[in-house]
Structure formats: C-alpha cells, structure tokens
Image (cartoon, rainbow, N blue to C red; front, side, top):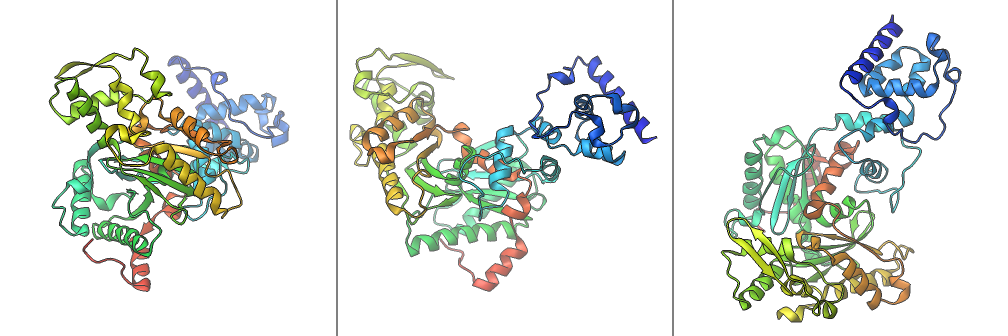
Length: 486
C-alpha cells in the first residue's frame, strides 16, 4: 500500500511538472556524492522498481521534494538508504534561498559558534550530513537583524533577501546626553515599531559598531559595558534570544573568511581591523584613520563649488559621488585623460564632472589633497599587516593577507585594485606575497548579510544566541558591569 501511494505521488508530480512546462529532472545539476551505487540491488530489494537504474530513482526523489523524500524512508530499508543520500539533500539545499557556497561555508565554519572555528578558509567537508543540515535549517526561527552602522542602520528579517528598511543610527535618536540605556531602548523600540513586530516573538541579531578599539583596560571595559547594556535593554523588552557580533567580523564572514583584515570605511572614520578565526585582535592593534564617507562627500562638495556647480543638498552630492566617482589606478596618469561623465539626480537634473570623479577618492591615499592631516589608507593597512607579521602569535604568516573592504564608500570602483597595488609596492616581498584585496561581497550591506548567514546556520539558537536566563545568571555571578549611563 505504501509503495502504491508513493508511486501515485511520483506520477502525479511528474504530470504536474510536465503540464507546467518544468524542466525535466535531467536538467538539474546533481550535487556531488562521493560514492553513489549504480545498481538498485546494492540498496536492497525495491520490488518492482529493482529494474530502474539508481539515477532514475534519485531523480524521482528529487521530484518528490524534501518533505516526501523524508517520508519515503518509512517505505522500506532500501528507500531509507536512497532518501538519506548526501547528494540528494545537497541538491535540496541548492534549491533553497541561500547561495550554496554560503550554506557550506556557514555549516563548516560557523556552526560551532563564535568560540570555535574549525578552519581558516573555505572547506567543503565531505563529512557534513546535508540531510541533518537541511532538517535543522528548516526549523531555525526567523530573526530580526539590526545593523547599526556609523551612518545608517539597516534592519530586516533574516529570511528576506535584503534589508527591508534603513534609517539613521541610534545616535540620531533622542538626546545625545541621555543615558546609553535610554538611547538604545528608544532606538530598538523604533525599529520594532517600523517592522510592526513584537520584541517577544523572534530572536534578534545586533551588529556591534566599531568603537573603543584600543587594547586598554578602559576600552575593554567600555566594550563590555556597551554589550551588557544592549543585552539588558533587549531582555527588558522580552526578546527571547540575542546574538551580538562585531560589524567587522560579519563583513569578513560575508566574504567566506574567518581570518583576515577588514577595512571598514565608516561615516566619520576608517577602521583597519585584524581578525583571527572570528575574533578581533585588539592586542595586535586596530588602526583608525580620521576620515570616512562624510569627508569624501564634503570634499566633492568643495570641488563642485569651485566649478560653480549648484546643488540643493549634501544628499545630492552623495548621490553624484555614488554614481560618478571612482578610484584611479594611477592618479597622475588619470589626470592626463578625458574623464568627463554625467549623471541625473531625481528632481535636480543632470550633473557633469571631470577630474572630480577620481580626485574625490584620492584623499583616501593622499589626504593632504583635501587638507586632511591623516595617514593614507594604504599606509594604515600596511602598518596593520606589519603588526600582524611581527606578532608571530599563531605561527601562520598568511592569515592576515586577505583584506576585505566594507562600508558604503568602499564600493567605489577601482578601490580594491588600487589598494592591492599600493600594498604590494609598499610592503617587503615576504609580507606582500599572496596579498588579496576583496571588494565588499554584498555592497553596502555586507555586515547585514554576514548576520543573515549566522541567523540561518543550523545551530544558530544554541551556538550563537544568549537567552535571558543565561544573561541574568552570568550577571549575578560576575556582578553588573554597567550602569544606566555611558
């Protein structure tokens, strides 16, 4: 009886797909399975289906889908073996909403949680049970992700393809003189109101901003104070579980790395953050350059005013920067080229720029052009790499040679190529060999997508989240590390 039901289900599925004009099973690329038997007898007797090749039976299971494939394990031992095939469940995972390579990276590198990473780089382990992964990921609850960047906050559902909303960061909410607890609560309450969701219904991932980056006792205390205040606010709002991860770490995860250097061009400053296996290496040193996206926009504004180009607001200038500006591979050579280009800004018409297009971003490498007394970006990154090399903490000279860019202004075309070129020229061969600069893998939303990757990992709730009871017990055990002031 069970076999008859199964066959009727298969035939109905085939007819439905044929009527809809769906691609035949052969059109689907099967996921790799190390040892796939070719004869049905190797699985045991399938009755009348013994005459069918194993590949056909595998395609039948793919047509059935994950729910019915799982149910087919109750038919007999042979179907149970077929339906447990690793390649079958890898196929189902490939059909899911998340890119396959991100799924494998997350499950092989992030499933253990923030305290442990099994490897330094991407490694698709053949030991991974994709059926187990699929089953666990299917029941992971949807989470709210809040990425409070230095300029703009991105928020949305972890199951969505992109952030659903953007707003000013919490520093823009309320009185700057208010206690940190009150400001955070006002900010997070605003996010929940805009998303029209009750805090008690879903876990939340909060992206921690880059602040207090020194390796001093005061800076460590400030970081802990901020994190504990954040937990206190959220648990007072009855959030069931909280995950808080550093912004730079999430940007690195989005690039499928757990170790490297993240260059985050923020709103007011640029941070160069060394990270080893998911941990910010404050003891090595986080370099900070005192110019960011706001300075770039302000410098473009000055250049436009010098040419008597009129505009309504700084927002207009920022839009023009995003549409027309780029980083020159060779600044002096670029000045001899015809680089004129135009763009349209809604409500204000067309704007035409020439050398302003590449001169704007050049202050990242030559700050003196814009009247800024700061270290050039390439020099700050090379200094960080030199510190990583001299630390000799891990006996590995390669972990810091991957540089990942993040932040809105890091999306400027040509930045990754120029930075890599400058680093190779500036650093000695034993450090510069193997350097790779990666542009933001998800544009301005890289940290948000890093959080999304964590939120969908099969062990998210157990490995990455802290619950109210755990937090209260830890606070009672260690004593409160915060007061309702900053």
